[in-house]
Amino acid sequence: MRRLVALLGLVWSLANLGVAYFFLTGAFVAKTAAKEGILAQLSLLLGGVLIAGFAILLARECVRLLTSADASETA
Amino acid sequence: MRIVAWLLVAAGLVVTGIGVAAALGQAGSGAQPWGNELSDNFVFSKALPFVLGFGVAVGLVMASTYGAKTRSDGAVRRWSPGTVFGHWVLTLGFVLALPTGMWQYLGGILDVNLPIPLYLFYRVHYIGAGIVLFAVAAFVSYLWMTGDRSLLIRRGEWSRHLLGLAYELPRSVRGPYAKLLRIDLSRPRPPMGKFTFYEKVVELPSWSILLALITVTGLIKAGRYLIPVPGFVLWLASTLHVAAMVAIVIKLLDHLRYTFPRWSLMGAITTTWMKEQAPARRQGASEPSGSSATGIAGGGDT
Image (cartoon, rainbow over all chains, first blue to last red):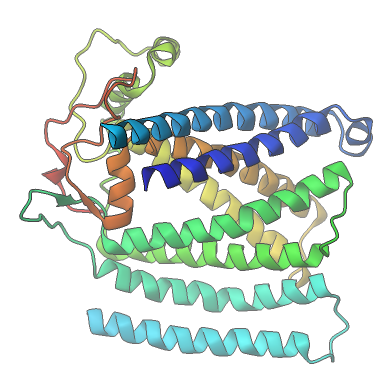
C-alpha cells in the first residue's frame, strides 16, 4: 500500500511541476503582460515558484516512502 | 436520534434527486435559449440549495458516529467514521474540481484550446464543486451537532502551540521561524496531546480559510446569472477564486508532504483508528518526532 501511495504521490508531484512550469513561463509571456498586467505576472511567478517548491518536497517524501517500503520488504 | 437523522438523509436524497432532475429537465427541454455552459451553470445554481440541505442532513448522521472509543489492542479512534467519510468526499470533490478549474485558468493564460469542448471542463468542475459544497455543509452540521472543538486552539494557548510548532518544523526552518515570531527556544518542548501542533496551528486554520474563500467566491460566480452581481464584486470574486484555487493546490501538496512520512495519520484517516501514542515521523528522518504526554487517548475522536 505504501508503494502505491508513494507512486500516486509522485504522479501528483510531476503533474504539479507541469502546472508550475506553465505558471512560470506564462509569467514572462508578452501576451500575459498585455492582457493581465504586472500583478497577474507576479502572481503567476509566485504561484509557480511555490507550487514547484512544494511539489519537489512532496516528491522527496514519496521517494523516501518508496525506498523505506522496499527496505522493509527486503528485510 | 440516529433514526431521525437517517430519515432526514433519505428524505433529503429524494428531494435532492427531484430538484436536480427538475433543473436538468428544464435545461434539457430545448425550450430555453441557453448554450451548454450557461445551461450547466443554471443546473448547478438551482441544485445548490438541495445539495447544501442534503449535506446538512448527512452531517447529522455523521455526528451520530462521534464519540471516543478504545480497542482491546490499545488503539484509539482518532477520527470518527463521519469525519473520515467527509474527508474522502471532500477529496473526491477536489480531485474533480481542482484540475478542471486549473485548466480553465491556464487555458486562458496560455491561450490554448484542447480538442475537448470547454463546457465539459466546466461540467466536471460544477460536479466537483457540488461535492465540495455538500461536504462543507455536512462538516458544518457535524461540528454544530457534536460541539467538537478539539482542533481549535483555546484562548491563552497560542504561545504554547507556537512553541510546540517550532519543534515540529525542520531544523533549517526552526531558527528563522522562532526569530520571526520571537519564540524562546530555550523553553522546554510542550507536550503535544491528541493532535500535532502542525495540525492545529497550520492545517486546520489554512484549510478552513481556503475552503471558506473558495466556497463564497464560487457561489458568487455561479449565481451571477440568477442574481445581479456588481462588476467590481464579480471581478474580486473571480480573482480571489483563482487565488484560493492556487493556494489549495499548494496546501494540498503541503498536506500530502506532511502526512506521508507520518504513516499512522494515513492509517487513521482510512480506518479511524490509531495505534501509536503520537503521529511520529518515521525513523531515520532528520526531523525529530513529536512527544506526547497526554497521548491521543486524552480526548474523544474528531
